[in-house]
Amino acid sequence: MTRAATRPRPLGPAGVRARLGEPDAMVAAKKTDRLDAYHRRFIAHSPFLTMATADARGRADCSPRGDYPGFVKVLDDRTLAIPDRPGNKIADSFSNLAENDGVGLLFLVPGARETLRVNGRGRPTDEPDVLARMETEAKRPALAVVVEVEEVYFHCGRALIRSRLWDPATQALAGELPPVGEVFAAQTGVGIPPEVLESHLEAGYRELY
Image (cartoon, rainbow, N blue to C red; front, top):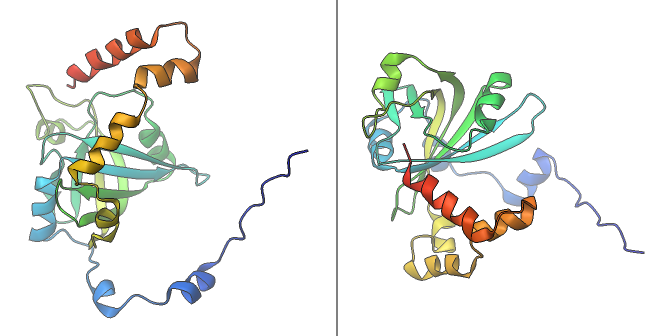
C-alpha cells in the first residue's frame, strides 16, 4: 500500500516573520499608492504582465497578458487599464473580479532585472472612451480591466537573476519541451493528430487581434 503524502505544516504570520525577519526601512518606504513618473515609464516599456485574481472562496488564478510595449494605459496616477485581447475565452479573471475585485499585477520588461508590482481593485469595462485608447492593428478590444491602484512598487531583481530568464542559453530549454499539439492530444484524448492540433494553434497565433 502506498503511503499517503504528508502535508507540510503551515506557518502563520508570526512564524514566517520569525524565520525571515523584518524588511528594512528602505523596502517599506518604496511602497506607494500612486503611479509616479518612474512607474509610468516602466509600464510604457512593458510588453508583458501577469494578473492574479481570486474568486469569492479565495481560489486563486494567475493569467498572462501581453502585447506591444505600452499596451497597458495609465489613465491617471491611481488608475490604469488593461485591454483584453482575443484568447481562449475562458475568462477566469473576469469571473473572479465579478466576485472579488482584488487584483495583483506583475509587469516585466525584457532585459530588465527588476519588476513592477501593482495591487488594487479591478473591474471589467466596455466604456468606448477607454477601449478607444487601446486600439491596435485597427481593432478595438471588446473589454478592458480597469485597476484602481492601492499599492505599487519596484521588486528587486534577485528572482530574475537567479532564473537567468533573459539569458539566451536559458531559452534553449524550450526546445526540450514536447510540441503543444502533442500535449493537448495526450491531455484531452481527442482523436485529432497532434500535428493537426499544432497547425490549428499556429494559425490562431497568427491572428492575434
